[in-house]
View 1 (cartoon, rainbow, N blue to C red):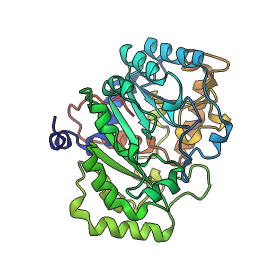
View 2 (cartoon, rainbow, N blue to C red):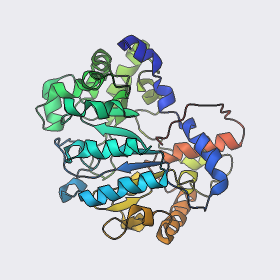
View 3 (spheres, rainbow, N blue to C red):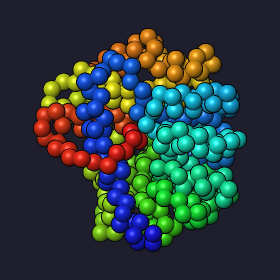
Length: 371
């Protein structure tokens, strides 16, 4: 498939639409409280990274230098296959591809019927891994700048060209994975949003998504007021160039260059929400390099919301355990009180509310297990 054909075939609006939650809500909503497997599990199996990014949302946590043992990962892979989990993200905490044998774990998951996505900076990928990469559902590659000096300031790395080479590498063996570029906007690269967008197209990415730095750890990594003002101006002045099927740049105008809407999310429900439907239908799990298992990304590291640890139990025994149920109760209270922050499940709940009230009409959609 030629690059222009691929760009036409991939529509970012469908990939990131919150409406993809609805099929799972319809299928699982009547089974709340039953022993459901997770839809998608995010695997943060190492804190090691070949980058040292200034905006890293795991900045302080990565100091632990933690990683899961091979036997623990083996157990998780076997459990996910046995539980018939829909999907697994091989993702953050550090750079997942620095873990020895990572591609073998990915292959086993795929062979076992679990769809796999990889979130990577691309630095450690090799030609020998291309066949496995091509079998994935999607690969999201971190890109940071079209300026090599900016790239070095952000990542403390010397592999500038590698960030743009992944589409060519993966497609060298005829792989069909969707390959996207993800750019975290920070106080160094925000002036280059237009050039990054252009370079992503030239490199053969299927889309580029811009993510304003989210300050999960309170380290002051978010964009400052001047940076926000400049970014808004650059997007507005180049609006005709930003195709919503290829990039989310125009969405940032609506949110004032914020990743998550800042207002009280409860005001957008038809009636006050009593629980988080994403939690209750067992949508997601996050397995961290410390062995802990969480249900919400913003809570990773907070033991109050940890449902178990692989150092003590297998994942299959942690999931649907009494501790799991008790944490769901706590998280439901938080959601009803408007206490949740920086979580994609808020948007999924809004979609479910619109569906229930009839303001969102959803027909048959392509199955997308990555929630």
